[in-house]
Image 1 (cartoon, rainbow, N blue to C red):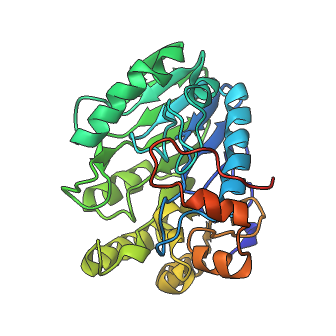
Image 2: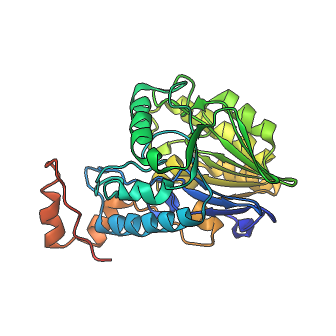
Length: 335
């Protein structure tokens, strides 16, 4: 990885707030231009079970801290976006201390209150589960917003800043059961930052085409789910996504690779050809943590090791036994 990646843009400030390289499931990012501040995909989650284990106390400590960071960033944001309705990309309005670390509607209110919220169309190019989540958001968290507008294929102008959204693209491969997402491009002067969550590589050829047409100076994207290869995702799809990623790092000078890819502890080895292509082109490729000059912290991928190296307290173990109950209390964690 190349530590030179920090701050490649002069007029657009990009600050990742939460991601797999920070120890949670998220791609939440604050983007600031001289005209406007945008909070992209303000959601955060933990995997409820990995390696047949619930989140370790260190994971709960991490999501607690990063949830506060997102709320603090929301205070300065003018606009909040929702690329799709998975709960690691927007904040729901119910109490959940296992996956989303939400305190009823308060967590959503802190993020969306008095904001312009630009969202994936809740009725078109959307699967059943996300349509229901979209309806729930509009009734709950969305009611706090100053206004909520669908963003698919639209451009919004904030002074000299242009915020442009793609058409709906697959959440992974064509005809993905996971539905669709929208990508965001933020342009100020001659700089372009593109945000492409959950495209999984991209796994779809047309998604690759759309990214290359934008010609971003900097791109943050969700890579392929390497940890699911051969089980829930066909290896040919993973390989196709990695080949597409090679094309991207050859064309885009600065790339932040995140999300599904970093749920695999061996992601660097499995992305070796991609890294080599970036280096050969003289381009920068980094995780979100490395972009900020921080250590990569793959807590989910190392959950089994966490339980071995840092055995939870007896109090936490007793709490784990309540996980089959519907009303789960906040986990006992030291902060």
